[in-house]
Length: 418
Image 1 (tube, rainbow, N blue to C red):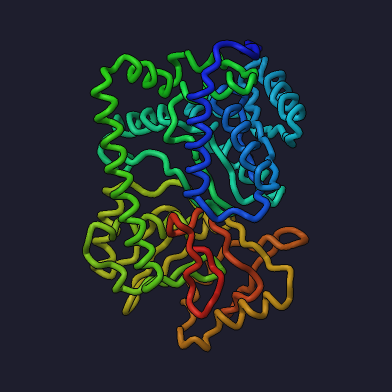
Image 2 (cartoon, rainbow, N blue to C red):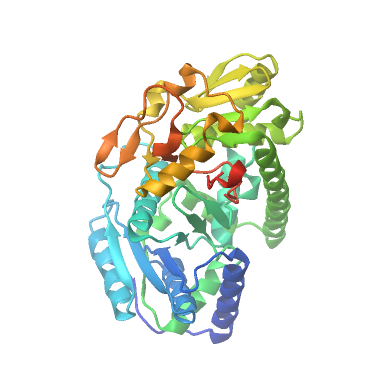
């Protein structure tokens, strides 16, 4: 377990500037409780230990608390000792800590992607169990450049904007407050704190794509990195504009049922650049997946919508009808979904009243009702009502909402997360 000892060269000025940038990023996020509760993904490296210390100080000023979460994929013999070391460091600071272990081993191929998916699932489940809505990751400016470069190597697409500083998932939101900081800034922070950290030897291995890209960017001239940063900033501005457009369309033309299907008015498709984006996010939300279909597949799907032709894509079935289209999960995908069951009878009654046919809307066709996901109730998994339009007993909790801002935009005051 190669630990970097406490002490070393301090850069108090750089660490103070990094702390100020962190505070500004958290203020820009907003939406925290009066006494905020944060979860921090901590591997033990310099980046995540800096984030843990910064988040702990930020919460301490506000009477809040931090929970450190470490995922141990057990890919290296020393990983258990490293996770235990993080726990000891957290305990010394009065920070709670949990070690999360995957239930199944990683596959022999595609280890990076599989590990990332497993890590996110474990972290989000831990946040849900702890009642924490804000999960912080230590991705910094260098990570952002690597991500964009990796996506660019896969061909043109929407990946030029990189990772979002704020993203919403089914339980809460993911925050990346360090994207404006360099790794050197974070190293200065842990040195200034006198905080030990762990160097993962796998970060130097050329087996992993990200490491190869990191080395290539390190050898690039400064002008190339400046150009890359400028391109990322422009792409992020375009993404933000697209998100605002999508939110407007969702508010005006989309109705998401608490049973996990959606009705989309035909007027939502304006024939503009945002059509593919809106369709992609609808499919991700209803289909329960993390990644959207590719651009070519989305183009074919939009053509099918224009021709009023039903199609399947992204784990969903889209059935055009006069004036719009129904989106529901494919039957084979429905069993993997989960709906959150309200425990309060008054809440159930209110949701049922809001989503009754009294709104003047026709119920969905039987083909849509047949693909309703299973309901996860207090006592386990049970089937939803097989007949009729009775959404009062459950509420859809998708892994990702339709809009990045996750605004609660349902009609009649209903609190459905879009």
